[in-house]
Length: 468
Image (tube, rainbow, N blue to C red; front, side, top):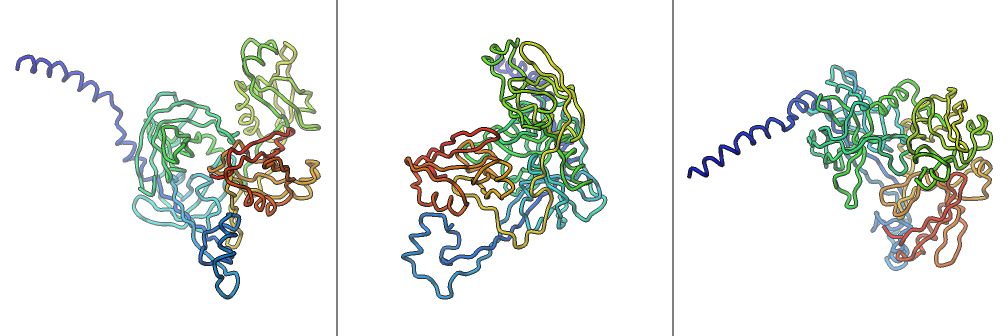
């Protein structure tokens, strides 16, 4: 008995010490939780079906042809069908007069947006503007005196510090999860303009657009996406730094669009082997593969094989840093660019140009617009117009407008699909209808190879089996 008593006495100081060191999130939730909202969207999808018995069967599905042939049609020919697509997300109030931030993908193509506050009040929201490149959207509700969040400084964030997420995973409003910052400045595929904050905070569908808080109760990021092989949380979550999001919202509020810089270079990562061959002490910077003829870099004297080390005084530690730094530079600015050329440092002055505006930079009425549908490869495609064909010097091709989660190969937004090769048969791609027809006729177990125009290069991309 005495031995047991002594053991317990030894454990008590340790237990008390451990408890005092545990983080307490209650104050953050009580003070900031009221500024976090639920964002629900409704999209009305209209289409025509010649098989009303199977309204959800896509016409590019191989089973569609089977049912079309063997299932008796109902009289009256094709019928209009209409159904609603609902989705949930999160957001947070940034000003007491009703401005809120969320993710662009949360409100994309929505016909109706409803914002629900923690006191159960509901408001219809309108989109002031959205930016797909950073996945940030600014929305507005007609309200006043709203509780708002406090903004933090992502540059002060330290890897290993505690952070808290508040949102609506699976529709469960004001759910709180916590974790630590796993890394800073993460680059993700198809995401060139955001230095993501990586955390191990549990994030699930419905958390998108919600805030990430530090232990001072300040918002340091917007929870945007996860890395997952199952579709659910697996320990890797990514947040958009709040300074990036606030810069985007300022531009959306003032001009309805986001302006970004460009210098017209095609770049790649500097590996250890490349650094040795170029006589560099360590692998760093962005290697210029080619420059756009007549573009800003070309006019400034930057050449292929130059390695960009600094842009406007900011260090370029890896190739992923350059698009973010250049994109954040205002068009028209004249900046100094430091490069490594033939074993020596050189400096050039570049006048930054502007990236062309995306087709949809702010919300437009979409009541009767057709839905942008992806095919079974997870790609949303469009045909090149005459101007694009002339500029790119191409006779035909299909532009990749969007790469969705179900995509199974290394496709990127902006790729141009030139040809599709299946079992030795090469089909030049001219129309989306032709693409869908060939895809529907292709066995789902077959490998499909695409000839892809990417920037100034052509590459082959193979899909290992065409099914999802």
